[in-house]
Length: 112
Image (cartoon, rainbow, N blue to C red; front, side, top):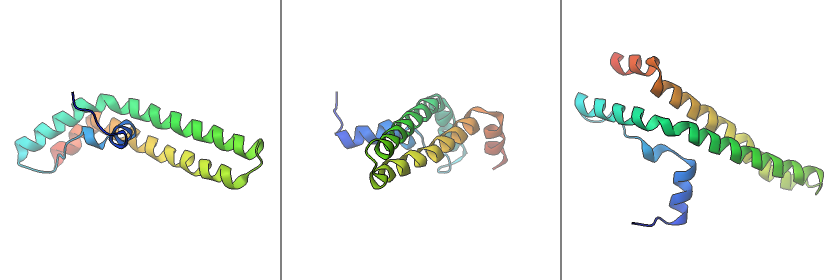
């Protein structure tokens, strides 16, 4: 078994791009195979949404603690910004998941 360095594990824990294949490259058969692969991997996307929501919530709680208890607005801003940025990542993941598992994704694939 090959062990990955910590930064690679952290990247794979938070970002899901490594799970999917590019469905715009190759001929029609390769594109269809990549799309089938991507749809098969789509079941992992709710897990990534939960991870981002938990990380964002934890950062928000730390920021609120720094603001109220420690009375440090600069330190709390250091945690508020990443907590707010976790929401667009969750929405993007939800959009990708919905487009891969719904009929809308099939329609878009056939229309190209």
